[in-house]
Length: 132
Figure 1 (cartoon, helix red, strand yellow):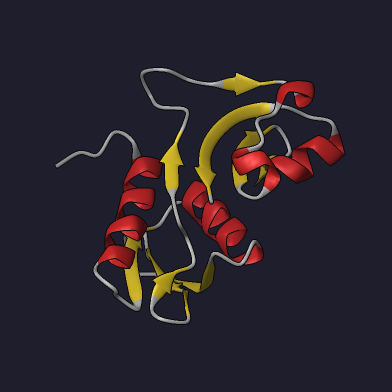
Figure 2 (tube, rainbow, N blue to C red):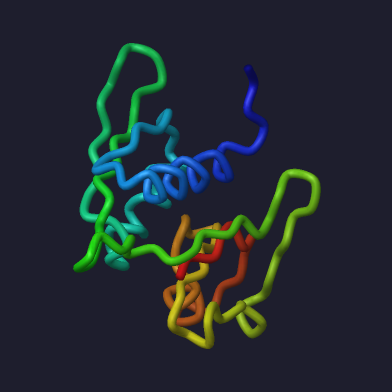
């Protein structure tokens, strides 16, 4: 089975694993997914991630984070720019998720970063996902 939107697959696997109360989730690796997972760790949405080489493309193992009572740290994940409809934004019009409480993941010419970092560097790019 060929997956055309690998970023949506990453977000869906994390969403499904959290709703099933799993501790970890395995995702096929790519550089874009590694960068998104690094943002999830830096922003405090997941505990950690490791990359395991399997001779093919590798596997990312994401360790999920739960707050007291077993409530997932991630309330929501939403894919914004899709293969059928790309969404771009310049630095002045970068979206704010939940009025600044959430995080937008932006793919820029300087790499994948959060909306706050992109605003600081004054660069725009493709709006990949919203996390809150």
